[in-house]
Length: 127
Image (cartoon, rainbow, N blue to C red; front, side, top):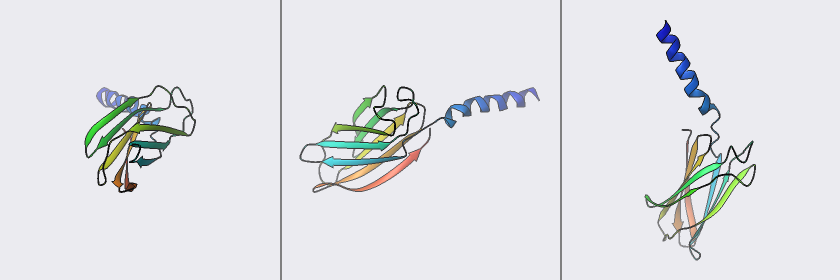
């Protein structure tokens, strides 16, 4: 009986931080091929800009990581934005992963067209 109680207590303690996970709820990516600039906007509600914020952004082009940026606070209570220099050609797939300081993450991909970004797909994971 003691083992069962110990296991249940451990499961409860380990699951509590996940209940506070606040991954972004949506991501919008815009790529400007003339400037080589990727604009990232994410809806990420925050109750405290210094405790709940997008803490990490990874950027990939065709599966190869090209950028990692760490953040230490969020500037807005409802959204995260940043611009990243990225070199990509028409047909390349750009993927962005955003991680919350309290847990949870979200990623989005776009395919670069002749005049910018075309298709997109979103993946949610709450880790």
